[in-house]
Length: 112
Length: 117
Image (cartoon, rainbow over all chains, first blue to last red; front, top):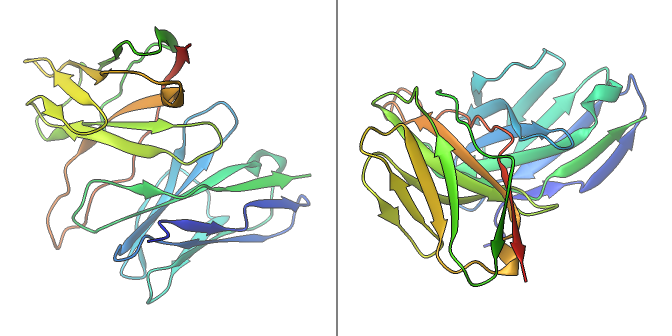
């Protein structure tokens, strides 16, 4: 079992651009959550997807959007990138009725 | 979700028990206590969780006070690989099968545990 896999591992984008990050959940998991972790801070919850719908959302602007596919994989899209969007983006997967989340290694996004 | 308070950093000698405290005085009756850790450059890793009884697994033990206002994570024989940031999180249990699963996790800044050789 490969666990939660994220791609790419590192990414550099220019301010104003758009970015798409990808996540494959742990085998059998149907729920995917996304987190943003700024340097020196704990991860902050962005949103959660279940059955291809956004089920819960944290305090993030509409520039942050996502998608979940029938195979449970997920994408995080960020539009109109700001310098402050530079962070480690983490994906976590779980079973819908489980309380244990498994995290990927993250995608390090740098906005210049 | 209730807020938690943890020390910013702690040291522990290798081979000794590491005891990490967490205060969650506003925890409500349906909220669990979770612990995750994050080793440098990796994603967070689930350690253990509990409601009101003490819990133990292959990684750690969780001791929750009777009034549930605080808890302690115990790593019984700390190794250098246990150096990490440890997060204590309180979280409501999943609602219902049809009502949605567990909420997103609310992380604080955690405790940076440094295991000294």
